[in-house]
Length: 578
Image (cartoon, rainbow, N blue to C red; front, top):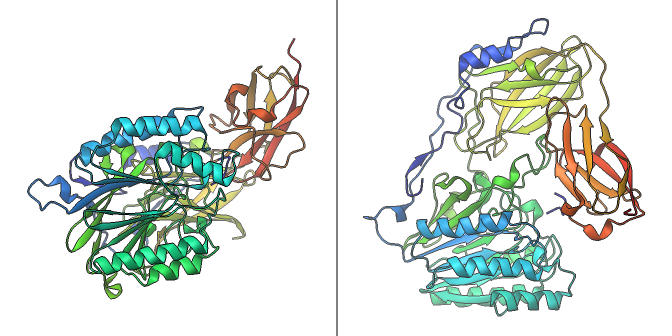
């Protein structure tokens, strides 16, 4: 990923059935119709034809929480992307919470697996933090298995020395190895360098093939568990971040074993999306993250949306004679999420149910759904829409928003936006900003719903909204001073005329550096109040302090979204400390 960037209960997920607490229908209408002189936008979906009514509720009842149920032959948690950081304890605290919560939920673990990126930069202090927390909380009878990830190489050492540190700190004997636990085979693979995409050589893949043959010969009816950090491209949700070199060899090696289940990390994509599991020739599943969320590109909230660092998830795997259950855990919510994925054994490809084409049902807006303009957020250059979330049988993932000039029907803007399914609770109604509009102009806005598999709602919501009269102002960055007194000096920063955040961020670079070609020296997500973002920049929080020196000139750059679209910048100089 980019350098910059109640216990034991059956629970029903309140996805989009009701408004969040504090926002009923009367409040919705009052909030969106209270400003005179602006075109009223309020549409009820009941005026639209053809609405299906077959959405299913989702519950979760893990069998190991039932004391009267049959005990599994094997049970183990799987986590990944812990990203312990040397300079912050945020991910360490989340990791400790994960271990404590899994110990309560699964008090008798046979194994514990971490699928790579134990650390953020592979430095000694990070490994020490990780192992101290793990050794304090681990269950004595659980077999520890760790895979090495790309971040675990990012310490400036040679590949050999980075691997040596991994071995010394974790107790693993190799970056790829094979263990048998209670008669079940665990094959752990390791990326062979720090490339973000990942590297799995032919030598390692040939070794994998031999281990698969041994496991199959032992008992072809049992599952074989395989773990590797980067996913196989074109499989699970987020696998665009997977490896391409030797991908076909890797896939075809596994293809002969439909009983295999592969677990990968790296993507930070959430377990909530049904595409996190994929079946075609074998089963593969993503393991989310214990650090921060990452999502699909191309949505206005950005790939790392606001509040993304809240996410913390885990898998718990139960193995029986005739099935494997994969339970998804929201550590951040202390709850299970969704139905367990169930894989039947002996494995038969013809009976796989988590296939790419398994969902043909389109989402829909219920008859009482509403869409309106949030007049409190209307400006000369922007509108904000507020609407009731649609329904889907699996997961409502996106909305397609088309904005047309009401007079000419010319498309002024169109975009995709997440349903924000990754939040707990999911916001309902959902508010989305629409920026880059003309002053004193009437727009027609239409919203369609899309599910995780790209099915589009047959009905839509429409509304009219008018921007305010006035001058559209450019974003500006103002500093309390333009020359700092040494590398420890702080400065007050004010960003004016900023839009409602869509994953926007601000970073510092040397004046001649090109963002994207090099990591930022410091960065943060913007938080906007009345079009303004104010904060104190303190150099002690620099991510790359070695590049911040006296006598040099730097620039603050404000970026739209999670990429490098620059919207504003200003420079400052670090002088010698008096």
